Length: 253
Image 1 (cartoon, rainbow, N blue to C red):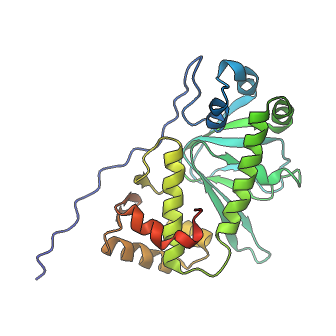
Image 2: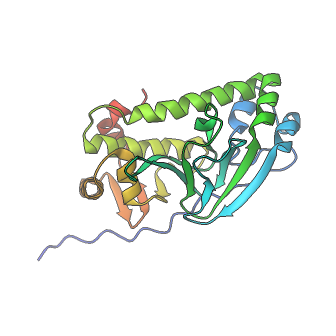
């Protein structure tokens, strides 16, 4: 009989909650605050931007934030919760395009076709900020920091697609995915080494272009190697340096 002790149960990991700020401070998950404060814009100076914001939600798990073919009139920034984007191929197979966390913008890939080319689905109870894109574009023309941040967000969206290109092992893809999530949470001042996976194993597998059973095997292997602790969807990254090493070929330097 084995003498090894079972892993202790993980404590529930708190989900990110937006702080609305006040007259001088931005909401804690504002998609534009980091870029604007970096160049000296505060909330009072960005009154025009905040006048464009309309809170949308709550969207319950499985509900659409927008649908394929909807006219493109606004971009959405996640305040709380999370969103996945997806499309279907000619045979009706779902393809997961990405996951969006608090403070991230959804819908930028609709700028050129002038309609949304994919669905955006809430993965859990989710609130968004909706920005009128024509008004945002006019404001960006007057405020270089806002314009540059929009360009940066578009570039990041394109880079995320390139991340999945090429022939990479399942361990590399999964390690890079976990480190990418960690980095994105850290950018918002949230827990970077422990978080709730709002997306299903099937969604993760679809996004990483892997089989669902492969994702389960890799996560089990990472857990056995002491790289992660996982209970249901509660995840702790125990050895981020090793995970970063495994996923290095898919991560930015």
